[in-house]
Structures are given as structure tokens and as C-alpha cells.
Length: 64
Image (cartoon, rainbow, N blue to C red; front, side, top):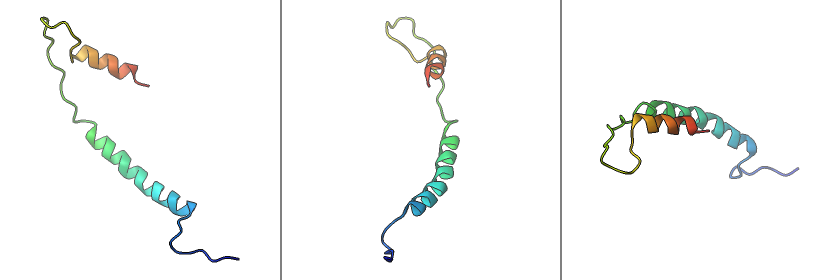
């Protein structure tokens, strides 16, 4: 049998690291979700798409 060197990483080490970093990443996403800015009032003189509540609702429903 060969001896395992201490420098080599195994699948178990990777899974341990992934198991501890996943909750931290989920916490970071959950705390930053409420920092979204309000939609602006529409400017009817412009002829391009604008950032309004209607367009934000459409974009959020179109995500998959």
C-alpha cells in the first residue's frame, strides 16, 4: 500500500470544504437580496425602454 502524502487533497477534503462554504454563500445571497433600488417614474418623452415597476416585474417573471 502506498502512503498518502499530506499535500494531496482528496475528494473528502473537497466535500468538507464545499459543505462548509455553501451555507456561507447562501447567507451572503440572502442578506444582499433586500438592497434593490426602487424603479424610476417613466419619462414619456423618451423613446427607449425605461426602468419602471412594470419592466422589473416582467424581467423577474421571465427568469428561469
